[in-house]
Length: 260
Image 1 (cartoon, helix red, strand yellow):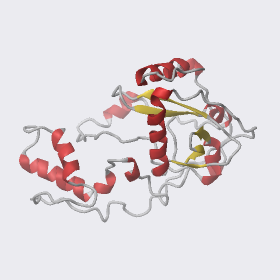
Image 2 (image 1 turned 180 degrees about the vertical axis):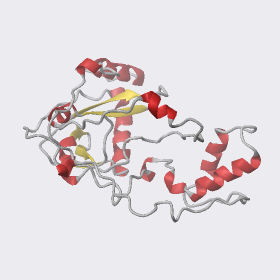
Image 3 (image 1 turned 90 degrees about the horizontal axis):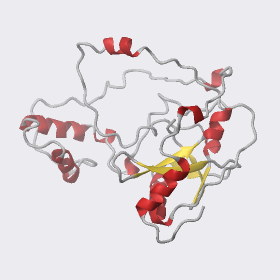
């Protein structure tokens, strides 16, 4: 597929979506294989002790704001801007800032601050795959209108430890779509070949009505905007080669569990 070198960013994104589509019909989804799952591939949670034992207590009378290592005046201003006067009482606002300062490592403001679950609680994930021949898939060329932006996204993920160099014989495709904000680009890894040889996890979701009944009369909590919702678990070293893809910086592979 050829691209016009004078192509605008919007035209480039439209071309990319015309090739891959933003959403895939259910009938075209590639599903994992039903087979016996060996013990070594069972998902484990090994939480020992009380993880909240050393959590700092919130003060009843929070003091005036002072910058900390990560939560500074600039970032405080972002929170204030999104919670206009009248939404919270002044003391409630101070308490929010005190909480965010005490738990500042739980909040990410830039790629280099991304974290993941503790590996002693949540061991790296192994992919349960059947015997297969390595696959090699080629990407379509990146449109000039979004080339620099795509390179920056990839570089940020390399710097954040989400991608690492690879020399494996696998190559999977990837592409980009627009996020819900209508501006930002989102890289999607097309791991269909991996799905074809992966043993399916046969979890059956609970009945919605039954789950909802358990929340009746409970306290409701809010959720802040998620920086990324799929990088919390590490991939085991033995499985990372299966996710290798080609970039302008050479072949790389995923370090953290992808979406899907």
